[in-house]
Length: 107
Image (cartoon, helix red, strand yellow):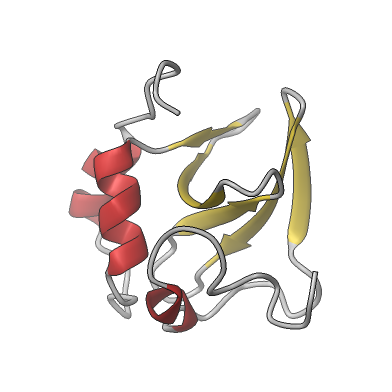
């Protein structure tokens, strides 16, 4: 992966991802789960989690749980990828968003 850590590549509006302030000063965390490898990023301003899936499917909005990560519903994914960083946590709104997981039948 090049020096921009893949931001701006894949699906979604790359410019909106640049509006976030990523929490890791070093390389992003690489997570392998269920045979899939993702590169995880968390914004320190808004607390939203995103991942770049290394299979080429692009960027995804994430729910990060205690034992596993899950992709959020496609409607949330599209909105979060299109929106610029809100600059602060939107606890109530994002709590509802994080409760909507991607259906395992969606691709």
